[in-house]
Image (cartoon, rainbow, N blue to C red; front, side, top):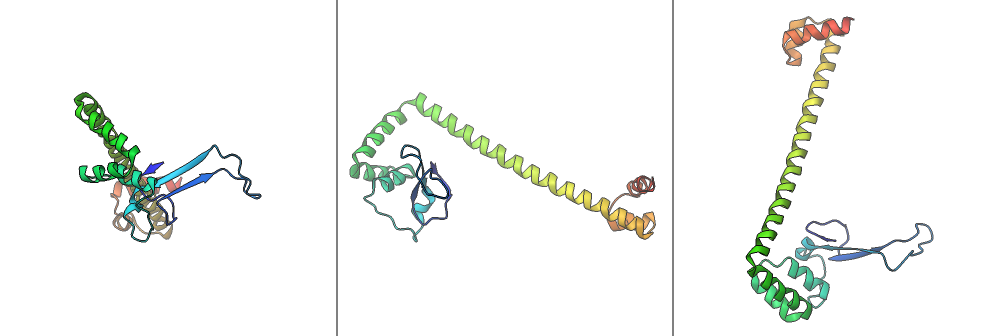
Length: 171
């Protein structure tokens, strides 16, 4: 997993996990591993990093913001050079570049839709909570014997709504 956020509390750029039995610590297999490469940790000064580590080089390449960084990494690492050479070829292909840009735009749109839906859900939740609270206040004020006008003012509701609720609670 190459992630653009910090997903583990560990002070490491990358980590690997295996399936082990909880009590005995027996490792089930060496075949199944889960790896996390946390790109933002590249910029964390508290985390030690070895510039000659191939995994660190790949992380820097994947985060490469400039052609210069990519070229420097390609000179250090023959596998990165192969990938960089291929990337240069693909980026010259207008159709491949358009497909990439369309895919990137779709991912961005999807993130925007998710964020918008989350914000809408939070707003609806707050509104629903406020409504429930107002109804509970009206119920309590009715039990205390306040008149409709006082309750409408206190609960910030129209008098008609308070009258409707009063009838409901009386039944």
